[in-house]
Amino acid sequence: RQRQMCIRDRKRRAHRPPQHHKEIAVDPSDAPPSSIRRMQTKMFVGAVRSLPDGPALLSHIQEVVDITAATKGFNFGWISMHVHDAITAAVETELGPDAYLELWRDAFTGSMQQKFLASFVELMVPLANGSLVPLARRTPRVYEHLTRGCGTFVWASGARGGTLRLEGFPAPFDIRRWAASCLGSLQAAANVLKRPERSVSLESLDVQGRKVAFRVDDEASVSCLLYTSPSPRDRQKSR
Image (cartoon, rainbow, N blue to C red; front, side, top):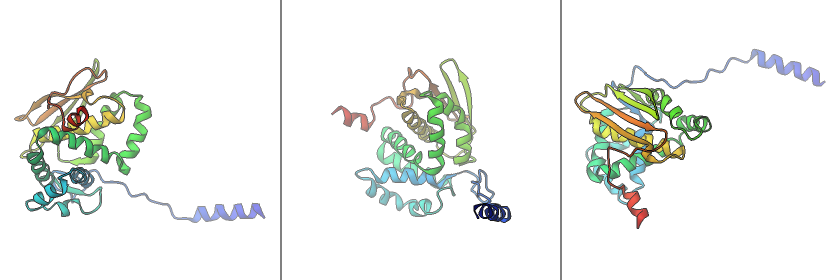
């Protein structure tokens, strides 16, 4: 009887139609020319909302940018960089550059708990063994999945780590603010690997050439060049 049941199960599996898993499109034709995954904007807005004055700040920004429409919908959907840039510009104007950088660290830390990045982080942490280099090497590929028409990341190995270069970031978006967003994201990744935030720093920023370079130091011996003053979080810890 058991043998007959096994035979019936094999026949059912043989006649079952194949399961096609829906893949996430990297470059869909219906996406805006320069766009970002909605989950990134949602995580950033969520980080703003968690601030003491966050709800009031978002209410003020809502008068200028439709945040509700930008954050409503499928996480892997695309939204225009014009919308994302307007939201981040308004937040940085209100908070200042130091708090903005810290906010992006918090936002990207939250995004790494989402399904897409969580599986990547879960795979990378044991392989990295505390080193930032394996993760930095895969940053160009991750960037391709999270953005469209926002330039290209290139990894170059060095003596004590290497350099991540972002080239071709489109105008008219603020490359200085985008550099801060990328730096905060990379430093959040460093924290996940139990590395200090100073392990990733700004190496160069070419506004006219629309490119930026980040130094990834595997020995964590360099300091951040973008913002040198203590962050609000560090000030609170020192009190």
